[in-house]
Length: 259
Length: 380
Image 1 (cartoon, chains in turn blue, green):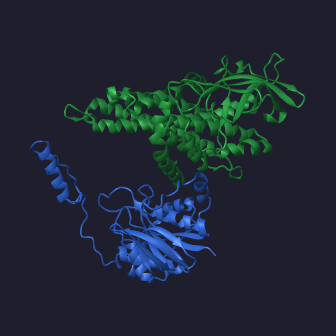
Image 2: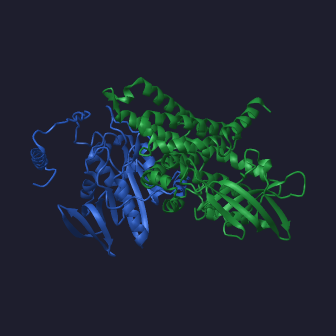
Image 3: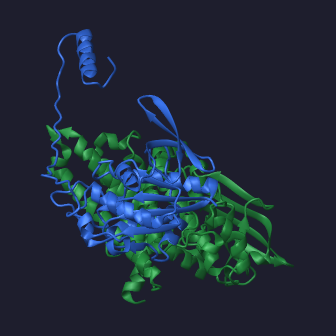
């Protein structure tokens, strides 16, 4: 039997954009937060058998992230790609990813990275699960497959929470929980032997253009400005004890250390 | 550059770099100081395919192209010149000749364990009285029934201290006036096979360079690579590829030195500004950046020619000459930018400076390369 797992990945932009976001192969790479999710899926497959699909949405430059997933050992790659998707906010993205997942049914598990390195919302995982109406646990550190459900652990506020989750389920994976494997050279060689990434457009998903892209996005980003970080060097006054006390007070006030 | 590199090459670079940053870079200084061959990392490299980069997949290799090969050697050398050396010598002058000239059975026997990194390879040509002039080889093989009786004294063998499979260049017709140079494969451990002391070298100290001596070693006639008398042909073919690898190695060391130079120039403040603001430092950084970029272009171009099945001897010789000379200049400038700190073992540029020097000497010195290149440019 084995597990049928879908990992949703994104090709993120490497450098902060100056004005408009332009995604090309040179400026993008597989979201580092998605690598632990891919690793988690591949380990489940190694333990229980099954099949791992990587699903992404984005312009054709996203193909390289899918190729990298294939080099890691993923069995099937699907890219949701349509000009009408440009400008999608997290809701429109979740709508499209959700439609893609519907098409991939039946599966046992959907995994997401906890967030993306470029837009950093952390919303697509939970939103997509809501749209699909499947159980969802965030920041999962431990997963155990128990024949027909998952036993998972997440850490919150110094407590370990344990859940039993029926399938199909969706999790976001804690970025530190699964050290992604090194990609072997023969995996890379094999990944580029045949162009086999499947591409789905809106028609394939049965989605109307007004539900995605700019048209389907209720969020409007008013403006985007580069944050100017300024470092200030301040010298504390007094003798060593006074300086230490002042430093402790400031660290404590800022929440950096416990009071 | 980007027109030469494909998405596959970018992923190769990214994955190798991420491995090297995590596994090699943190220990590069230590293995140099201790002159230690880091088996624990080498085993991981073997599992990832770094020891069979261009070997066919049916023999356990990764079957990648030459540009990928250059990128991999560049990236490993960026972290540790010694390990870059180990990988390029193993792949290009030990494994490659077996793939190109070996029989099916020989490939199965030697190329397979080499490609997986289970065994390390070495190329044994240099002798006390033979180096640039390979016709001076004094090692001999005399056939005796179904075996050769081999006597050889090979020096400066890269990987010598750890190599299991050694390509020995020798004379298979010692009774004749005219030497008949051939290649036989000798495996470590057979009777009469002696690994000499490790050389106490200026740089590349984590690579166990040693002498290898064979005393009346009996080797099966099946250990002959190709045919008798093919030695120089095999050697030249191996060196064409090997030179591209040394060019890539020099490129990687120079790249590391450039990066350290930039980092330090931006941190170090003199006369109230980071020294990168001083024109004298900027001139050096500009030259370093240009030399590195030119080395990269020449190296990748030689690799691209090889991938397209064209002749690439001249280009790979030029790339090796240029990149190794450039590497010495770039590492020298990196030390200069660091001032006194650059002369100290506290900073990695000191190691780059030492490692760089030998790239102008091995696998054909710069002078021999100029002889070869001149012949090509002049048209004989």
